[in-house]
Length: 77
Image (tube, rainbow, N blue to C red; front, side, top):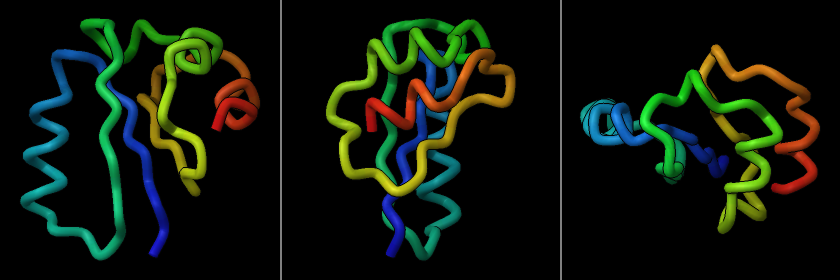
């Protein structure tokens, strides 16, 4: 199974957790709640600098509003 890491801000983390639990997906996942209120305010460089414990994930899911080069996140993971 793939290992997905969902990156979230503080405000959406609980709703994301509830949604994923209700879906009961057929893949493994983790949620990383970063120290920012709204995920849309994150950019790729900021995420990469604050994303610890993500090594080895197959896929990182971030907000659709995240700006910047996703390669920065990929290098970190």
